[in-house]
Image (cartoon, rainbow, N blue to C red; front, side, top):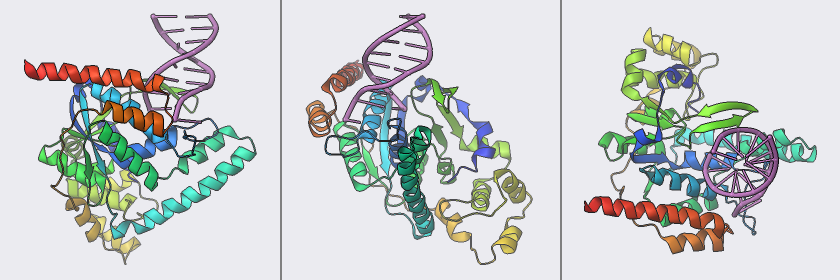
Amino acid sequence: MGVALRDILADYKIPVTAEELTGVAAVDAFNALYQFLSIIRQPDGTPLMDDEGRVTSHLSGIFFRTANLLQQGIRPVFVFDGAPPEMKTNTIQERRNIREESKEKWDKAKREGDLSGAFRYAMSSSALDSHVISSARTLIGLMGLPVVEAPSEGEAQAAYMALKGDVDYVVSQDYDTLLFGTPVLIRNLTISGKRRIHGRQVTIQPERVNLVEVLQNLDITREQLIDIAILTGTDFNPGIRGIGAKTGLKKVKSGDFDAIIRDKLPDFDPDPIRDFFKNPPVTDSYSTQSSPVDRDGLLSFLCEEYGFSPDRVIPVLDKIAKKEKQKTLESWF
DNA sequence: CTATCGCA
DNA sequence: TGCGATAGG
């Protein structure tokens, strides 16, 4: 989803350093969990698991990354998805199918000793099941950070919070957040540095996309950006074959949106999707307040319940505690 | 993904 | 000390 938009938005992303990101970040929790679940795996694709076989990749990802963010003065607020809209049903079913196919291909690749294939298929077989989601919520709570329950799409709720000024920016890999009106989107909020991807070395740095800047540069309105997304496909419609973001941009700017829909998809009504991006279900009942880190709770949750090594967990807890103490002192002076 | 290890 | 390899759960 939203992958196509990259072709017209990628020119407007600005590299940023972690220090420039000091503040409150609304993290698209499902997006982050999926990322961790996909990537934190052994070479044959097996995720990290405790001795009962419960997946723990996401816990490792959240714990170590969040600790780093806190260290950098970034306070994450995790926004979880609620019930998806009816319009998303097809996309959800299609993703389920792909996951199931990938799982079979993963098994096959493992049997045949094809490690890189195994890893790839394992990644796309990743599923956010109820255990992953609930254990993630517990861990975030123990770290003293707020969880916001979106009534529908988490990206929509995060955008709403950013528009209200309750958070400074939204963190997601998906550009779709911009369609919901997110003023500032941050991608690649990771430890910056060199990384090997597909054998090639690339430098990863967080990047910022400002919605007004994108719209000004492309000389379009947000409504037009939404229409471009509808032409190329969103989570709520399949899009039109042969139309990518660049063609979509051209067509929308020349006022040909309606004509294309009439011609290619006569039975399709784009208005409910337009309306969903402009007025999605959101809630005001949330808090962005953090509480003290529950050190003992974290130790028991990670080490006793999920088999993490205290040798790895304790230094992180110490680091967090030290930062917390610093902040308390600062607020005193 | 992030932390840690081992070698130049 | 810095970087590539790999372990983590």
